[in-house]
Each structure stands twice: as structure tokens, then as C-alpha cells.
Image (cartoon, rainbow, N blue to C red; front, side, top):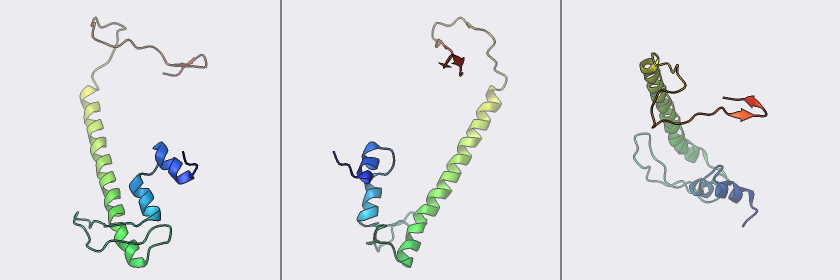
Length: 117
């Protein structure tokens, strides 16, 4: 086992992947344009030594696309949640036992003597 802090972070699964560690010390590699096609010239610099202006600008394509994709996914999941709430708003559980044998037994979550949920 290594006590290198970057190795421990990536190996634990907390943050960082092998590809991201490679970009820190190795090279950034091939980048994609916003339309998904690959830019022919690889970025041979890394974050440890720094990127020049052109390499940095090429690298920002992926970051902008990632932010846009995240915003779109958030909007879609929010829309789904709203639709589910609209459909289920009339359903209210009013009995302790509905009579089914296929359900789950629910118990309160207790922490420090207090009911949390």
C-alpha cells in the first residue's frame, strides 16, 4: 500500500479516476469538439506543468459540454419528479395495515432516543 495522498484518494474511490490522475502527471490526450468529433492534435501537456493558451482553450470544450449535459439531466429529472407528484398527490396512506402479505414492515428510525423519521 502506498501513502501517496493522490493514490489514496483515487484508490479509495472517494475522488478521481485513473484517467484523471493520468491527466495530472501524464498528458491530457485527445479532446472532443462540442459535436462529439475528436480534435486531431492531442494535448501533450499536463496540469502539473501547465497548459498553454491554445491547449487550455481546446480543453474547455469538454467542460462546457459537461455542464450543459448536467443542466439538461437536472431539468429532465425535475420534470419527472413533478409528473410523479402530480399523479400521486391523491394517494394518502391512512391505515397501519392495508391487508397485503407482500408489503414491507416499517419501523421508526431512532437516534439518541428521538424518532428521526
